[in-house]
Image 1 (cartoon, rainbow, N blue to C red):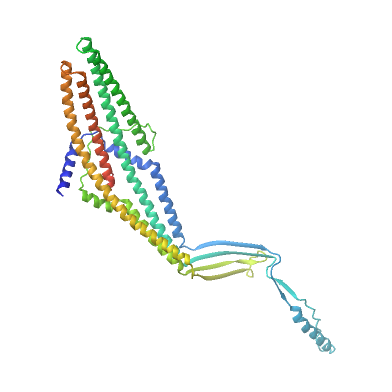
Image 2: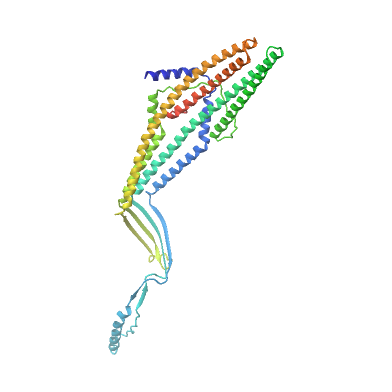
Length: 463
């Protein structure tokens, strides 16, 4: 506990004394611009919108479905039934005709026509022409698949939303790191430009001393070599600066060479949070754990969905339409019917295997949650101590810069007085330049480590 307090105190003292070229307002504006224009983030947002549409589709399954169904059939052949109507009626008609003929001799008996002979009938099951047109309303009374599928889509939609939040946090971190790398390279360019002026002046001084016979020609050659060496290092740092510019603008979806604003002499806000508090915050706020919990809920509902396949399903079906050999809208051709439909899968062994698969998937997710929690805890610890080490590196670099400046000033004075050779002067100048470059690197490395710590502990710099 005491050690954490000392580390936090060192962090606060360092931050209040550091004065790097870092802006807070401009950087925040760049972060906001990246959140609005970054293409990868837009893709994540589209995936979330797609999941919302899938959720609406799942909810729509609870509502009744209305459809228009029409069928017009032309048929030939097929099964038929032989109906012996002639064999049944013709003997009766013959007897009646005989009786009517005998009774017809009585003047009082009415005149009755002769009954015809009837042929047997062969009736086809398929009518030559037939149509059926109807509106159908289907309403699910009970269907476990609809219930659990809606819950699954809801959980997946929440997980997709968290994917957007995860990438948003990662993008904020990447923008900050890219910006700090740009500032680091820019200050490096400025350092080597100043160093170039220094070695150019040293070359002029050395030539003057040579012309006055105070140094030999090899000192001039050595001074010229210094100039070329600094120019080479400046070219390398300039290349790093342009690469940093291109990557930063890539994150903001801008032209690769777009200008980047720098506000000088801005203060840096400290991150005052003990390690244990940072770990607890990460465990409760990191989006990765929240997302895995939603996936776990979806897996649990997927198990219930597969188990529910063995339950009965009830649907209400209502039809109204017309049927017949032709389209006719009258009371003889229209019809209406209602049904309660039961569907029950009494035996399906493959469904048992599906349940086992989904149970295994749930166990994998539970292990993944535990593993992710351990990884996040380790990430916070590493980021915290990386930031602590970066603070110490800055202090060491500042002390080294002060020492190298004093050493160079002394050696340069001796060189002008002929008491130090060109090698000593070159070493002193190189040490000073390297120390200044170390200070630039260590300052911005601290800022980068701070951004990584904020991400690990799920600290949103915009809130």
